[in-house]
Image 1 (cartoon, rainbow, N blue to C red):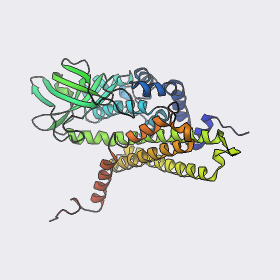
Image 2 (image 1 turned 90 degrees about the horizontal axis):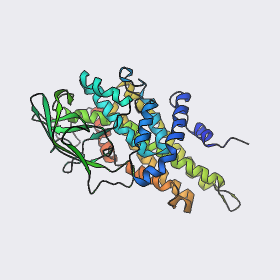
Image 3 (image 1 turned 135 degrees about the horizontal axis):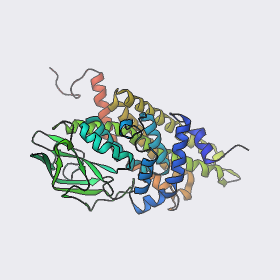
Image 4 (image 1 turned 135 degrees about the vertical axis):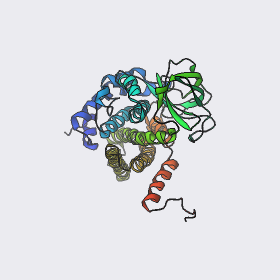
Length: 397
């Protein structure tokens, strides 16, 4: 009789884009340390502190971090593998990792050497971080901000408030955007800085990607040293967009992890469930559902790992990361919905995981760059490729 174990199913369906031993190690860690807690994390809406500390200890939260700072120094395909496998078990854990990777990317790419030396090694020890961009009056539009930063002697003084901040409930370190006299700039702010406080606002909870309440972060004349300005003053928007371009490929991997979880769960159900004297999976109509889902997941995975190559080579990053997240997030929502349909009454039961998959999938069509924003980014690439420097309909000299 053929081996129908979950591990064998994963190996057969989802070949790794890195060495198989690495993928297998990640899967073992997820099975032991993440999967048993996935339902509780979602139900109670908690940040998985111990799980994230365990990822750091296992070297899974510092995959692309330079070895000089205690990282693994591996490529982005390895990071995507971690995000994908984590999110097969718990997308909330995947999202918790995203905010850590964003902070590492911002400091690693743009931070001064003194800042890198101070904070990057701490990520290997389990430093938990949050990427705090959003404000109540601006949302995704970060070109002008109400949070202000002014220079005072050897310090920057930050005043303002960020809203709806992912991972904010447990973050020990924040990367924030603030307006200076020159323009929007990026700052590193430790959680224990005097004058920094957090609170839960009225819109803190979401129905998907529940890794703890989205917190509001208050900066009441918070002082940080001059080298805590990350990159160039006034270049914060460009830097923030660059970091988002990097993290969107990892977000795509999280989405496809959700799709895989829904697919695997529905496939196991259809294989084992008997109806009208045969297995549900033996009905041709059901087989067609799975054939469509499998081809879409495979296509999205190929696109994601092509985007990882673009990250490693620093080529057309905005294009590939936007395409990957656009495709993967849509596939995840479609697969999660079809999985519910295949499983019938079991699919809509509260004690089944399919509701979580559907909520997480839909939430990631919006979080981390909505589908509409991603289409705009891809369109900008096309305009440039076509030699048009202006938007369609605009006059050209």
